[in-house]
Image 1 (spheres, helix red, strand yellow):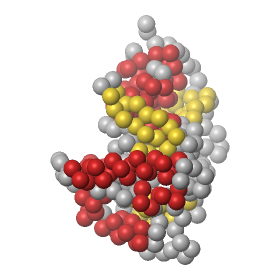
Image 2: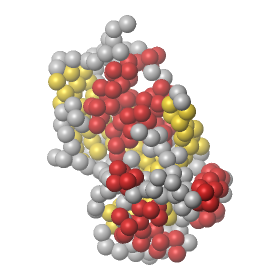
Image 3: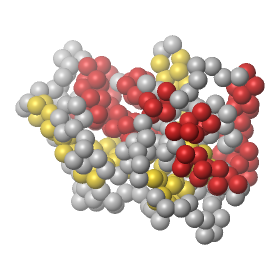
Image 4: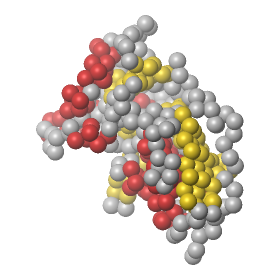
Amino acid sequence: MPLTFEAGPVRVRVPATSANLGPGFDALGLALGLYDDVAAEVTSGGVRVSVTGQGAGQLPQDERHLVAVAMQATFDALGGQPPGLALECVNRIPQARGLGSSSAAIVAGVLLARALVTDGAARLDDAGALRLAAEIEGHPDNVAPCLLGGFTLAWTEPSGARAVSLAVAEGVRPTLFVPQERGLTATARAALPSAVPHADAAFNAGRAALLVHALTVEPALLLPATVDRLHQGYRAAGMPGTNALVSALRAADVAAVVSGAGPTVLALTEPPEGFDPGTGWQVWRLSIEASGASFARGRLGHAERDPVAAGRKS
């Protein structure tokens, strides 16, 4: 059946995310209280993208923009393309820092495209949206918390990605140490070996299981629960500053890990009073986003257009 499109604009708010969380490589993720706002509407032709905030002047402003790419893939999955699109992106999630900026763009694109099709939700349910977003991204560990919120466990079956979201225990207060330099997921993945020792795999299985318990029930166990042997050590040489900061925080009994592929550092327990990460690091204390991506009709409002309005930092 041919698609019919909504006449007016729609908008979404998508959160930043941190994946892996130490031992949960490609499986565990956490949604954070820092957001991108994106609005879209169908036009008579062409693809136009405006970008404010993070990535302004650097990201494509046409059909190559990742939100537009994800929207076009979603329209294909739904059964057809609109004549044109206009997008407005207000970005607060830093690009290429290990905070899920690409997953946020992909999730935004999937949800916007679905909302612009009159019966889009009937053609693509939430489980299908997760599968499609993970297929576009290549793995589900960031798109799952972006969509679902909270602390997520994601896995892939022959039919595609699946995930569950769990509530985080009281007292878990993420602190992020964000550097100026950028990192690339592809580069970080290239540093990983094709095989790891069986003992290391068994070690991580135990710590990942413990991490689920620590994050949801007993945060006092977060320090031992966040030890990793599968990826962080192999990537350390490519991110010496990140590795040194993780080591310094853990020496101070802080449950610190590399956020995603880095170079941001995530602390899941409070750093000691007066802890100094050194020069070149911004320190952000963020809430956990419990609900994930949200959708509304209409254009972006005044607060949403402010590139620093969403998310609390200190």
